Image (cartoon, rainbow, N blue to C red; front, side, top):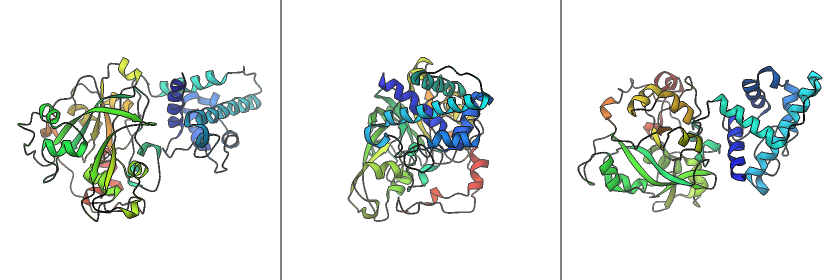
Amino acid sequence: MKSSIFDDIHQVFNYFDENGDGKISASELQNRLRKVGGEELQLYDEEAEMAVRSSNADGDGVLGGKDDVVQTIGYSSGWFDILTSVSNTAIHQSTVRRRQPIHKISIVNMLWWWSTLFLLSIHGSQAQQTYVDNRQLDCNNNYTTTFGYTCNGPPSCRSYLTFRSQPPRYNTPSSIAALLNSNPNDITTLNNFSSNSATIPTDTIVVVPISNCSCSGEWYQHNASYELQGTNETYFSVANNTYEGLSTCQAMITQNTYNFRNLAVGNNITVPLRCACPTANQTAAGIRYLLTYLITWGNNYEYMSTLFAGVDVQSILLANSLSQDHIIFPFTPILIPLRTEPTRINNSATPAPPPAPPVIPVTPTTGGGGGSSSKWTWPASESASVCS
C-alpha cells in the first residue's frame, strides 16, 4: 500500500515540478492547479505563496530539498506531508475567498484526487516517465530527471537500449556488449549480424537487449563498468560521448566514489544506464517493453513512430510525459513503448542530417570536468528547427 501511495505522490510531484528541478514553486503550483481544475482551483499569488510557505521548512521559498521530513525519515513520507499541507491550504484559501462551504476531504482522498487529475490530464493509461530535456549537460545541478527513470513499475524487467556503432572501439557485437554489459549473442541475433565479431558500419543503430533493468533505490538502471582510458576523460565525456547519452554525469557522480576532479587513467567507474519497465497501466494497455532510443539530428516524433512499426506518436508522447510541441534535443534518450520485441532497425530510413551549424561549445562548468567533443556542440536556435 505504501508503495502504491508513493508512486501516486511521485507522479503528482513530478507533474507540479514543471522545470524538473526537484522543487515546486508557487508559480508552478498555480499553473498546474489552474490547468487541471480551472477557475475552481485557481489561487491568487499570495494564496499560492502561503500554500508553499506553510510547508517550506528551509526558507528557500519552494517545496523540496530539506523541507519537512524528506531528508530524515524518507522520500515517500516527506512528499506525503508536503502535498497534504498544500492540499489543505488550497482548500482553506478557496473557502475563505469564495465564502462557500467545502466538505472536509481526507488526506488520502485529496491525494488520490490530485493523482487522478494528473493522470487524466495526460491521458494516463500509458503515462510513464519524464524526458531529461537536455538537463544532462549541466553537471552541477542534480535535476531529478538526470538520475534515471522513476522506479514505478515492477522491480525488474527485460528492456532495450539503442547504441550507434563507433569505430574503431565499439563497432562489433562483442565490443558493444562489453561496453553496455549485455550479451553479444543476443545483439548478433536481434540485429541479424553475421557473427559476434562482425564489423558494423559506422553510425549504425544497434538494438541492445538488457535482460535485467532493475530498481536501484528510486531509479531504474542497468549498470555497466568502464575503465578510464585517457587523461582527458571525465564523467561528462564518458556519459555523453562514450555512452552516447545513455547515462548522465549527475548519475555517475552520485554513484561513484571518485571525485570528479581526481579521475585518473585506470579508474574503474560504474555507469548507470537509463532503462525502464512498463507501469501496471502500460502493461494493461498492451505495452510489454520500453526501449531507450537515442535522438539524433533530424529526428522528430513522426520519424521515431515510423522507425518502430506499430508505435504511434501519441504513445511516445505519453510514455515520456511530452506534448506534441515540446522540443526534443539531439543526443538525449527517449522511451519507445513496444507491444512486441524490437527487431533490427532499418538505418536506410534515417533522415539526412541538416547543414552543419556554426559551432557554439556547450560544456559543463565544473561538475563534470569538461571534456566534451564536437558531438556536443550546437546552437540553441537549431534545436527547435531540427528536433521539434
